[in-house]
Length: 462
Image 1 (cartoon, rainbow, N blue to C red):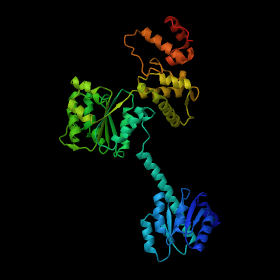
Image 2: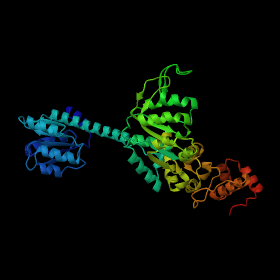
Image 3: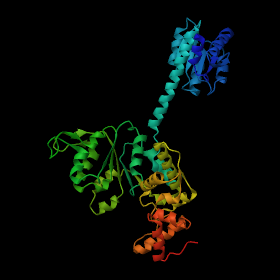
Image 4: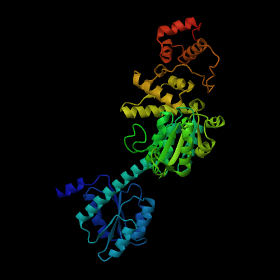
């Protein structure tokens, strides 16, 4: 019973390399470990041990004194090839100093001859557990240090590759980054990606939207306030800049920052100091700043709506996010990424896109960019009748372009009837004349599309 219990303690696929030049000891260790559930691989000297070492070996037992290569040299070379391999050194009773040196070189443990079977199995079980914990910790570190890629960086386009490379280059730096581009292009997720790839990843990522807050609250939110500084200030409160100490402060929609607050932000960027409203104390802040805007800051500078010196402080490193309509080859891989994420979050079966749905997505101009694509797919998976998404499930309206065009034509100067007529024609083209599907994509009922086709003199598609 005791022997069976020992077998149950060991994983049945655990493989141990045993190296010892004494044939009696080698046979004894082989018998003991095999009877305890291990698989074994034997070597009679140090060189043979290294020759027989590969990734299938889970544990190693090296005798300290062996011909060709001794145990310590075997240990060094083995760990060069397999840094996480647990190695137990076998030593003679009088070789304590050498055994201690082996521990310094990375051996997990040493055991002295004559070897007690129970002690040997206990050492091997400890080494096995240590190796498993080491692997788990390494996976956790990788999850933190190499975050999931930002959605805007997914794809095969030249831009996606350029963006990925730029993010990896700017992440280790502490310089201010300015991310520009249309709304919905993924500026916030790229900012967070830069933070997670950089040395401040363990610090906070604190965001503030300069467009979402009332003008009279932005300063208090950004720099904090003292108790009684204004009506409603019932206690001391740090601002977002202080909260981001040791990490990253993300200033979203920086183009909407009121002109009267821009000098204070400029001072903060220059000195990395803040002064709460109602206080005289100056506080030093260790923080990296990333800003984003959908506006043309250079144009605002020319119109004197944005300080030039603040613009130069912000635009140390710049990233321009391309709109989705200018990178149509990225639409499909990004859509598949979003669908996989939705399925995983809901615990549902994977979703897929029909060839017609893929063509529909690639032919749409995406005025709302990545954010709009995410919303379209969220609705399609919520209201669709099957995991396979068809064009009728996408509920896109207008802004359809030919695959060859890459961008949508301007609607300026066209009448509403002309715009509506073209939207219906393009939608019918994509659905191959299926009026029910076209009506669903346009957000109208089937009867309405017949009426509109008659009123707008739209011919049946061929």
